[in-house]
Length: 163
Image (cartoon, rainbow, N blue to C red):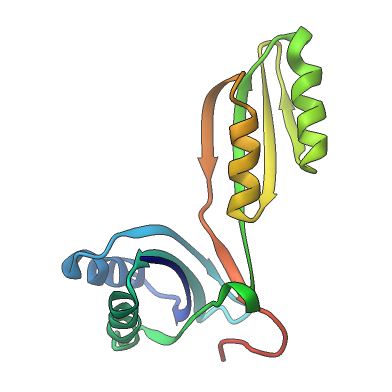
């Protein structure tokens, strides 16, 4: 089993997300994360889907998705030739005495403090999944009251791109 990140250009119209997600559901494929956003061309959106499977399953996913009429192009983003990032917001319960510990840890990871309240602090961190996971693991001695992750988004390095 391996982890794959597919980047695709799709029509920016109603129902496209439903049709793509429905294909995964009908075929019994699980989506690990999914992000969608408009591109510089308002007629197109970039959809990034991460999935886990063996090589045959991943090849089938790519072939089946590319057959959808709304999908203009799909590529797998290879780890060594692409930049993939994720955003996480973490609300941490901490009083004034422990706040400096969270701030220090956040500085080490180049995270941003985006909100400070009497009994909590919200930290924003962007990077590779491994970086985000390491940060969250190091918060083990704190109570995380809420956590939101965006899912992976990415682009191919260099001149390679979706048309």
